[in-house]
Image 1 (cartoon, one colour):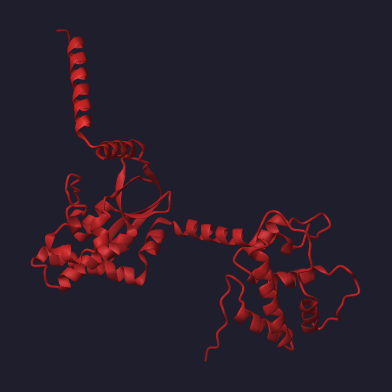
Image 2 (cartoon, rainbow, N blue to C red):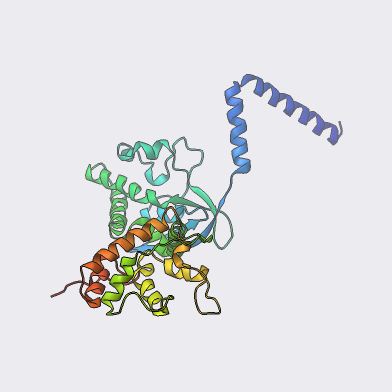
Length: 334
């Protein structure tokens, strides 16, 4: 029999065996096998966007932030920090990693940790190379807590286990000073991205690129009391308000409305050749959030203005009640 004929016979036998096996399996089991195969085939391996190292005492653990925002700690780093085996037995019937697989720890492992599984997260490292494996950063405090509860119950009966519990205690003390998410973000430099995303979310709530039709937004009382506190006559003889009134308004209103709002408004509300803005800043505030927040802020400002007899008094109260973003709040110190 030629090699080609042998191969054909082998393929036929293989196909018949697969068909026979499929006939034995229940419809549910066949569906599950197909689903598992599809999951493996189409599994998306996330890429790390930031990485770094967390140092707590003498312990160092590599950390990464994945493209979906998941913070992970190096599986190898966690194992090494706890002084346990780095090898994960994928054939094991247990969902738990080696650093939690000790039988004496079982009573102290939350059911959520053992039932949901602890399979490491596979991801692509920031600088390329082979895929790496990580443990969700938020689980490390819980892992440490298991060892500390076991030590408290006096079920750790050898020096090696007691040493692991000691390392877990060092890690927990580090987490008590700074949250684990903050530690990862600081180590990887991700806090800059996180802050920008948070600022963008604020601006999206307050500001829209589509300006609204002008409507009277600033009450007459705002200008009456502003002029009174500045020692000026109201109303002005000229129809158009001087530019310095716009500077005062930016300082006491828009600069205190929310982080980044004034800067964004200046970007989208362009300055015309005449030197004036194309529109009023408030025309770019969102109708459902930005405009109501502006009205609320103006009501508070007018309330403070009515209580003051001088500009200096008003500024002191305003800085305490609604400080500029990025400034420190004045405190009465002895």
